[in-house]
Length: 95
Image 1 (cartoon, rainbow, N blue to C red):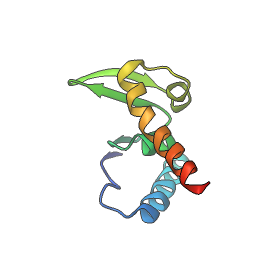
Image 2: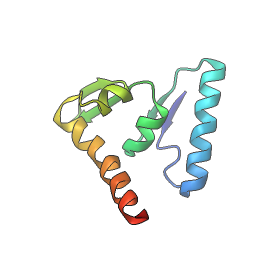
Image 3: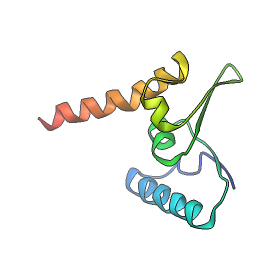
C-alpha cells in the first residue's frame, strides 16, 4: 500500500486513532506499506523502518529505535530532535 501524507489534514485525535488502526491493519494483513510523511513523530511511532531524504537522496534508512539511539546521521538527527523538543516543552508546561 502506498500512502502520501494520508493523515495530514486530520485533527490530532482522529490522526492518532486512524494511524493506529492503519498500523493494526498493516500488521494483521501482513501488508507492505510505504507512507510519505513530514511528521517525524508519526514516522517513529508507525514505522518499522524510516527513510530520511535530503536534497533528493536517501541519507538514512534506520529503525525508529536506531534513530532514537542516535543513528542515521545529522539530517536524521535534526528531524528526531523536533518531536523530542516538543515532548520536553509539553512536559515543562505540565509542571
